[in-house]
Image 1 (cartoon, rainbow over the protein chains, first blue to last red):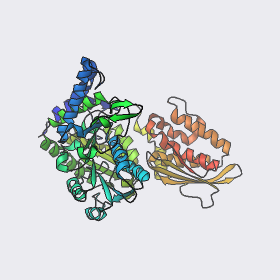
Image 2: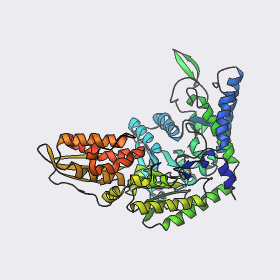
Image 3: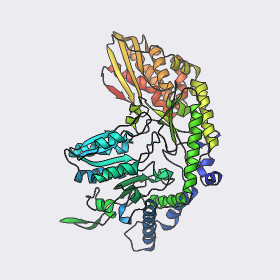
Image 4: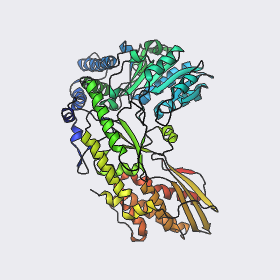
Length: 405
Length: 148
């Protein structure tokens, strides 16, 4: 059993009142909150160790470099990557995918090539590929989903072919909570020599990921969804792929030697980290990984599954409520609509009850279009949420129905 | 702290449930389409002018209670008004929606029911989409306007 009371006590923000009511934070899929360990790691870094990395010979620069590279090692272990050379620090998942679409895309895609994505993707795993295709003449193809929000595996097998160069898919859908059979899809793609990218933004917060077991070439995630800071994320890239990719941004730190005749690029992964990085962000992410890995992951999974089951059962009893996304084995995310009440009105009324949920298109407009909805309301559950908070959500929905229904 | 009842007043709830002047004018001589990309709200305004005066107006779209009620209230308020009168009204509505503590002019009539929106900055665009769309229709641009 997860000691949720103890976990909650580690998150200062959970003691906040919103409109005179206790905060019920059900928006962790948009951004999770931070435990004190992460906040203190960041302030401790700034108070004691800050300087620029990889440059100075003075003590602070060495300490900052050790902390920054120490965080990289924590990420490597967290993902079970083979070497630190495969861990590139970026601003977040969005930047990671843009890096791949621009660097790998510009050097590897051409007319007649195909990039395969699914209908479930977040805009961050659609738009960079549209841009890459526009630049290179490649074609973007979209694997369909069914009414439950499950990716059509038969269609996937049929679409995968000799023209496919890249398979770029979510680990977990942010809008619906569908968990994709990533391992199987990646294996099928690799059999044909297709390069694979997994958008893990919604994947890593639910449990550890082993990139070698998954077999993907790229895996991306954001710190802030993993109880870490905003503005820091990770691109894992298999070394054999990354070493053939051209740098995507030029500047300091990504070079070994610069002259006006030419430039020699730095080794991996620094070749892809131009400019002073988000050092404090990396340190905070390292602390978040330490904090997260100290939890019992079986207990985390059981707790989140229990919250999802409780929420699903209670939501289905709300008159006029429709669940959007009913895939088996979902992550702890529930998207829904209520007849006659627009999600934005729901969001405002729930906020009046202290309940924070996400409303809108969730940066997945094709998913909304598939279900012919302008928007949904989405509640997402993390390690610190309780069944009492799920009940508070249900009560708040009652208030909304009374006010507008 | 403002109560939600001040946002979702009875007038708003009523106009959301039973929007006035809903639909499209088949004989429209002015029209415009409005989008609020952040919410996915969409709105079509069709107008029939008589000289300088709005003879008839319809609105049709999908959006939240605030945007639906605002379009409904606006359609009632602008019918029979001249371009200049509509422009003045828009200025007053805009001021009401955005100025934190300003007085609500009595000449706004039922539109004053939207005053609560100013306490909810994330929702101001819901209330103003219809006005921007009406302006575009009056200007005869015939193009899609966006709140962004």
